[in-house]
Amino acid sequence: PHSSHVNVTRVNGITTVLSMPQGGVISGQSAIINLNGSTQNEMAIVPVFGLVINFPRITTAAGGFNPFGPQQPIEFSEALKRRDQRLEDLKKLFRDAENYARVQDAYAKDKNLPVPQTDLKTAALAPYARGEKPIIFTAERERDIRGVARFAADMKIKAIIMGGQEAWKAADELKKNNIAVIYTNIYSLPVRDDDAYDYLFEAPAKLQKAGVKFCISTGDGGAEVRDLPYHAGLAGAYGLPKEEALKSVTLYAAQILGIADKVGSIEVGKIANIVVTDGDILEPRTNVKYLFINGRMLPLTSRHTELYDSFKDRK
Image (cartoon, rainbow, N blue to C red; front, side, top):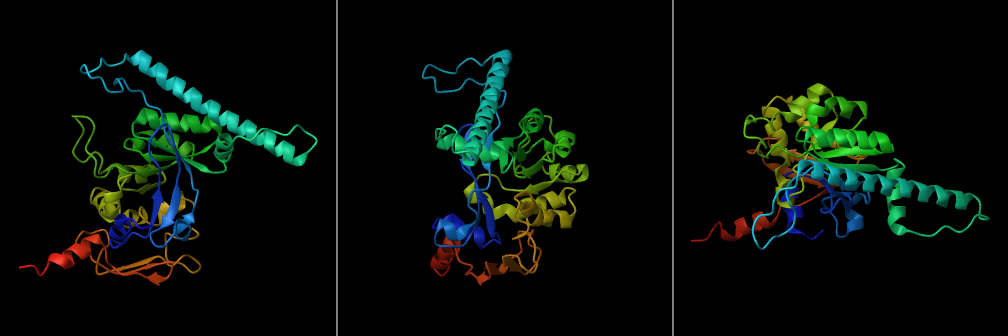
């Protein structure tokens, strides 16, 4: 709550964020927070939202540091084998979690059964294995996104795609399995040399036309979150209707995160998170005039404004 990033992000009109861990195959659990409060509990809208998994990819790059020079790339067949093994390991974890929850439920109903062992790690996975909570899979390429869709269907879990660079190519699988996309690549560079310069700018419009549920995010960079309105604005300049661009960072994001009953639009009964500007909030020239979070008007000051005030009159 005391990071300088909070105020820097907030003064640009952003009131609510999804906070996610990084690293490993299973990174951990995410949280949805308002950008105001003295403690984590004060800020939390959903303290534990979803599990974050980096979906196993096929990669032929040799991992690790080699002091004797570059390592030889892995054969594709070996890379495929390793990816498949990581997927099987994931499936086993979820099956174990589901079985663990089943045993715990049975014991809760009948105390005459043997007392089951406690495994906190497996217990934490149980709500996700049962499809009670969503799992956020980071995936960019079409084959990986289709892999997530198949994995979700096989394991009967709730899935959300984070990244989604080529998600529009897998629109059929995403719609079939009701998988939403948190698109993070507006400011990214095309991966392939023969990709058009606007390849990633147009992706949200293609998702919208294909009927895939999506919202726009800046990704995992804390310093970049403040630029969220401009990501949506750029998508609006490359085919996404203006109203849809605005919804992609407000109502649609709330719907995908399951908090549309609390935030995402101005309605009676919702949390009073309101931004007042002097123009189109998706335009860089627009200034935020007033900001309310939980009905409280907050000062529009940050590390940036403090430095500006310190040096503006310097001679």
